[in-house]
Structure formats: structure tokens, C-alpha cells
Image (cartoon, rainbow, N blue to C red):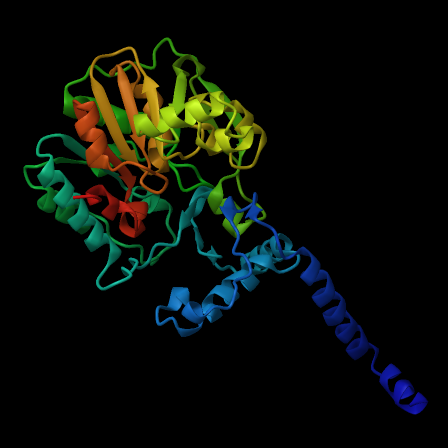
Amino acid sequence: MREKCKALLRYPLVLLFFAFLVIYAIADSTVNDRKESELENRTLAQKPTLTVSNLLATEENKKFSYLYEQYINDQFLGRDGWISLKSRAESLLLKVENNGVVYGDEGTMYQKFFTLQNAATSGLQIEANINALSTFAARHPGLAKVMIVPSADTILTRLLPAGAPFVEEGPWMEQIADALGENADLLDLTDTFSAHADEYLFYRTDHHWTTLGAYYGYLDYAAAVGKTPLSLDGLTAEVVEDFFGTLYSKSKQYNAVADQLTYYPGLDAEMTILQLVDPETRQAVEDAYAAGSMSEADYQKLADRTVNLYETDKLAVRDKYAMFLYGNNGFCRIAGSGEGKLMIIKDSYANSLIPFLLNNYAQIDVVDLRYLRDATVDELIEREGYDDLLVLYNFQSFSSDTNLVLLNSGV
């Protein structure tokens, strides 16, 4: 035994490598339960439980092997550091992509968007979403305006790496317009943004448009519905430095150029986040809490909350864009100083546009289909009698969102 130990000592690198594997495995098993990654601004995969359904699943994303692989990929020790090291190594190799993020000129980053996502059943998800939107518009003819915001790679073509095969969005925009027909107007911002392509329309390190980009979108919407647009003259802008967004969080590009986030404190207002939009259920919750039969913790999960449009506390964390509209919520109501009622069905692009609309409407109801509970869109339309309805999505999220089918829920 002693001779075997002496023999092993002749190969110190092998021993060190073996010791590293053992120590890393032990350490990794103690830290692999993070719920969220602030750096990547997303929820991390958790360790799946082996069940009959995921063991026998035929869909790839429901198989136990797939779920466990996602868990391992999200939870290994030092993940953030390894991503950063990979970014540096690939930069030295002159690669223009890391972890699904494509690097362009002038410090710009783009979500890798070379193919469209397949639907769970058959065909492309964007085709299913166009059908859902068309069906919804046909049921409410003349009510909706649909704004599909082009992706940064469609507008900032001069900054893209040569030959990057991004999805061509133009033909799909035409298909959306054709599907809507006379039932709804498509507000395609491609021409508007192309005319301002040299301006700061998109963040370099984040997948959202900037506040300036949102303002140009607002101007197009105001013109489409015959509203007098808000002028930025006389408003004081607050500029937040050192904003590193979601694309930076994915790529960890070591020499990334920070963005500036702009907002207008003069447009701030109170907003009510409605957890339950059914009046009878909401009243039952209030009555139970008042009678002492509901705990404070349970009440806070169900009660409405009044917050500000600009949650400035978020400026102290990495995901600074979450300051707009208090992040994403299922159903919100905002009182404005204009006339009429507006419903907005949206992704997170709308969050920085909505403050501009407060002078144009008396009431703005905001729906995020990902989190809407206890009501359908049609129920809300019937109940509130909206004067206008805006569906606002970025093209990439519109092409992959699996919740747009809920536009027709309950029908």
C-alpha cells in the first residue's frame, strides 16, 4: 500500500486534479439551490422530482432528463465566474457571440435570433400567435391597435457583425397586418425607427428599447388614435448611469459599455396592482381580513396594492429596468388626467411607454397575460367598456410568447 502511495506521488498533477474534482463536487452540492440569479435577471431551474409523467414524457422539455440537465446548467458552482471567463476567452479568439448574445460594433449587444420558435403542437409559435391575435381582433372589430416593436437587429443593421443571419421581421409584419385586416390596425414602427436609427433607441446591454424609443412609439400611437401627444418640453429628465442589462448578464462581456436609463419624475403617478379583479371575490377577501379570519401574510398575497409608476428603489439593484411600472404584474389600473379608458395588453416593452399616456386617458388598465388571474380579457372589456385597446409587444417576444392564446380564453 505504501509503495502504491509513493507511486501516486510521482504524479502530483493527477492528484491535484482528482482532489479538485472531489472538493468541487462536495462544494457544488452545498450551493446548488439558488432560486434566482440577480446577475442574469431570471429564475433558475430547480432540482426536478422524478415522476411517472416526466419519466414517460414524449415532449422534450417535459422529460426528466431535460429538466435535470437544465437544473445542472443553472446551479453549478461559480457559474457567474465561469461565464465571465468564457467571455474573455472567446473575445481573445475573436468570436462575436457568447451564451446566446451577439456582439456588434460600438459596444452593442443583440439577442441571438436566428430561428423562430416552434409551437408545442405543430408549426411555428408566431403563426399560432398571429391566429390568436386575428381571432381576438375579429371579435372586437375597430377596438384594437397592435404595435409590434422591431428588434434592435432589424434597425441597427450597420452595427451588426457581417453575415449574422438574424430573422427577417418585415415579411412577418406584413403577415400580421394581413391577418388583422380591417378589424385592427398594425402600428409597425420599422419606418419610424429607421428614420431615427442614429439616435439612442435601444440599450446596448439590454433587450428593451430606451425611454426615447418608447417615446417615439408613443407618438405613433397618439397619432393613430387622434390624441394630442405629450411634449417633452418642460419635463426634466432624470438620467441613471451604469445600467447593465439582461444581455450583459447573459454574456458577461468583460469590456461592456454601460447604458444610461432615463425617466421623467414629473410623469410619476400612483398605480393600483389588482391581485383579484372580480369585485365579489375582492370584497370577500377584505371582509375576511377585517373579521380577523385571514392572516396578514395571506391578505398581502391577495390584497390590492398602490405603488408608484416609477419604483426608484429598483435603481439600486442590477435589473434597473424593473423600476418602470413596478415590474410585470397581471392587472394594474392607473388614473390619468385625460379622457376615456384604455386597455393595454403587453410585454415589458410597454412599461416605459405607459407614463406618456397619462395625459391622454382618465383610466389605463394594464394586462400582462403571463400573470393575469381570475378574469379573462373579454370579461374586462365587457365590464369596463374601453374606448381604445393597445396590444404592444416586441417582435421577438411576440414570436415566442405562449400566452397569447389567452386572448381568447373563455370564448
